[in-house]
Amino acid sequence: MDHKRRTALITGSGQMIGRGIALRLAEAGFNIILNGSKNADACEAVAEELTAFGVDTLIAMGNVGVKADTSQIIKAGIDKFGSIDVLVNNAAIRPHTAFLDVTDAEWDEVHDINLKGPLWMIRACLPGMIEKKWGRIINFTGMMAQKGYQGAAAVASSKHANWGLIKSLSDEFGQYGITANIISPGTFPGDDFDVETDERRKKLRDENPLRRLGLTTEIGGLIAYLCSEDGAFMNGQMLQINGGVVVQF
Image (tube, rainbow, N blue to C red; front, side, top):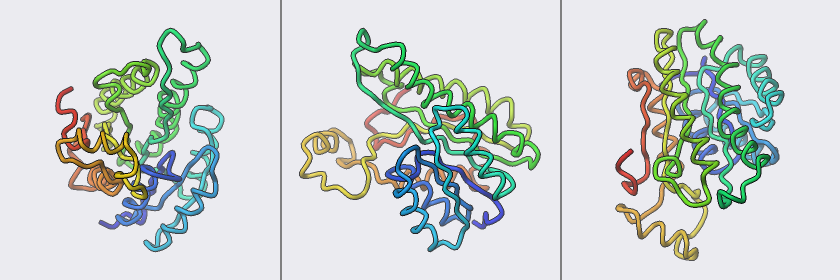
């Protein structure tokens, strides 16, 4: 694939899944906009890794849960590259708090980052995608939204709402060559830990039908497919990548 004239923005891309997505899309030829809310050094390190692929990069720091920050992130990307062709809304928070203990402020923070942030980012990117008649919007749901977990009501509701948002966007904007899909990942703790030394992760591994956890390269590969011409007919779908630990929705 040669997407050197196209640009991908991945929120929360200084580590773990976001980093893996950035590396895979850079390998596919996309220019990359990295984003983080606090750790600029981590984004700088990822940007250094991306130089191996010969693509242009930009670091646009900001909290996607703050509307003014999302405007600045998008403006920086458009000022440098002209448009944002692929938007991957990866940034999220997942606090665990008993439902009766969640304050209104805590509930709002989860929904601001997990739901309103993607909404604001999508709104800002869509005009350019419509003009070019090409775009890819990728959001994330998760097993908390699919199954429901104690202490995760705020996260589950925010992630389930993302699912509904993507369904509507896929129908409304497909006519412009824009696809909108959502991914539900399993456990992707990163590539740099020894699962044998962590009892919780070992338990998660042993409970998975594949007897392992996910690799960020695998989720990056799925997103690269969605952004390729081979994936152009994939629209409005919820794609699970979890090793089979959840097989229904």
